[in-house]
Image 1 (cartoon, rainbow, N blue to C red):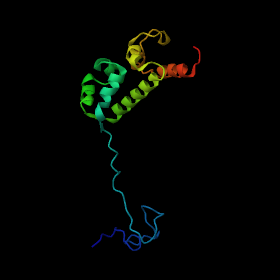
Image 2: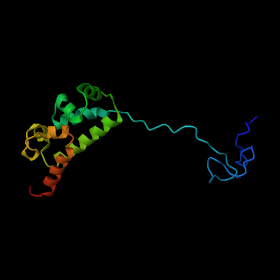
Image 3: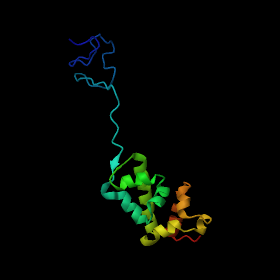
Image 4: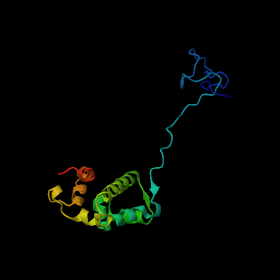
Length: 158
């Protein structure tokens, strides 16, 4: 036997005699259909993903960096990088960071020969007040690198 608060299938009204004549959970609901009340939020999308075909290793090798330097660049431990390179799951923030670094690599390859990206990241640069581009990124100033890429691509004299 349904409880006194149950919703009847036929009318969509409460069996208590709801005077509003409608469904409390969804006032735009069509009459004659069953009301559905959510009791909890839907499950969030899966955040962690498995590294496909050693994407992290490929990115690190493309950048020409050791695990130690790559860990400085991506702000994660060498151990985490080793785990990802062996097929471990990337969480949301780490996946986002890898995507940012992949985009940076693609941008740099547009203005620098791919074989020299790693050397460029580790060499002091006058455009960054004598800092290495790796140090600029470590300090959270990746926008300075993107500005340089933009200026080089657009041909604007500095």
